[in-house]
Amino acid sequence: MTNFVQNIDAVAELCDELIAAGFTPFLATRTDTLTALQEALDDRVGLLIVPRDDNAIGIAAGMSLAGGCPAVLLSDAGVTGCSDAIASLVTPRRTPLLLVLSLGDEPVVDGGPTRRRLTETLMAELGIQSVAIEATARLSARVKLVRDIVRDDLRPAALLVPPDTDAWGT
Image: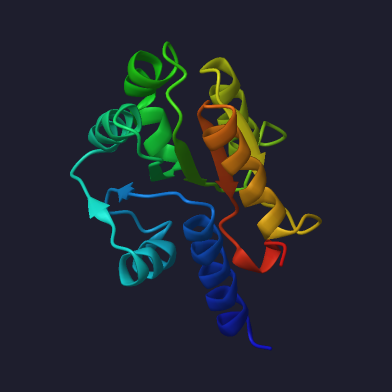
């Protein structure tokens, strides 16, 4: 199977798993890192595009408090830009919502931590449990885990998505 087909299959599977887990609505800003997932979600259930990442967090927090189960799609750069919104709207109230974070795996500096490690540390500091999509774990199991955190435990969660969808478990 070609890489192109594998990538489309991985994105479609993640999209289907998120919808089946009951996440809705989906919010995002325009970003190059999650374009395929954004398009798949928009085609299936719709996607609210907002101008800024902190706006997406604010809207999602309000939707969650109103009984929804929102998911916000962010790049790893986007999450650092909206950490104040997360710290003020999500963390203090443990607002149940999902952050879908696209990650880069390259080291920040030679021998330094990866973006994934930095993002996991930031999420932990903000009181948000991270769950990474990895080749060794089934994608459905990872989505079920974040679903349980958000829907059953009523806490925020972050699903860490690698940039190379060939690495996603199926």
